[in-house]
Length: 260
Ligand code: COA
Image 1: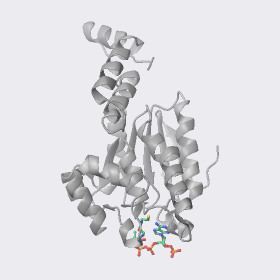
Image 2: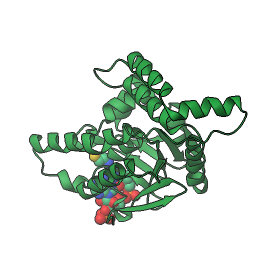
Image 3: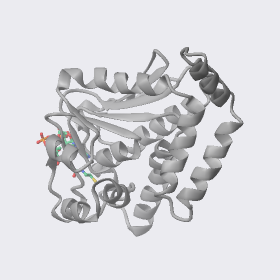
Image 4: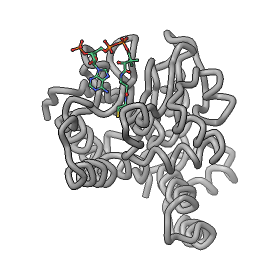
């Protein structure tokens, strides 16, 4: 499929998605969100894709937020729909992806941009990146899961401060507070993202999917994380990957996982 707002490339079983609206600092308009939904959900059925890396076009921004020009005259109902649709069709879809998703934050990750990165399973940022949820400076609050996911990642106190002040944090502070997993120099960003993804790809895809569901359960209303862990743990025993992983260990060879 052709995309207008995304660059999409498949290489070494990794799907690279680049948000490509550089002149608008890759701000997420409706069309871009719809394309992200399409490309991610399609990849779930694509056996040639084992993992997804999301980044932004250019040197300046990962994503500078939702496209402000699109909701400038919205009323409360339209605002509710914007948040609900975005959360269910994009941000939750990424978080619940069984295939690992890494955010490679190449510059500003603000508002919906940071929310996009936080929905991913792992985040890397360049040393020059700036991150924040500045919505209160627009008379809004984060609407794509930011109040929740930032609190899980950095704790309630730091999340409150970032959201109430609208201040950005630099990469070093983001790393120190647990907002990003790694900070790298700009020219090493994609290399590092690929390196982590390729390591995950050597593991059992079946077990990786189970682990994502179990970890997510801790942060999902109405789910008991410990029970989910027991269920997912048990599911692993019925998988070909489990039999292959154990056999490979005992035979002192590298496992050849199929994800089944
Ligand atoms: N929505 C729509 N357009 C955006 C945007 C957004 N979230 N963020 C940036 N843009 C556009 C600007 O309007 C500008 O477009 P123009 O050249 O047609 O005027 C272009 O991207 C470049 O941005 P600009 O503000 O000129 O760059 P800057 O270097 O002066 O500032 C930022 C960079 C990131 C600090 C600034 O763009 C900004 O604050 N953006 C909004 C961040 C935000 O509040 N996000 C949360 C939205 S809910």
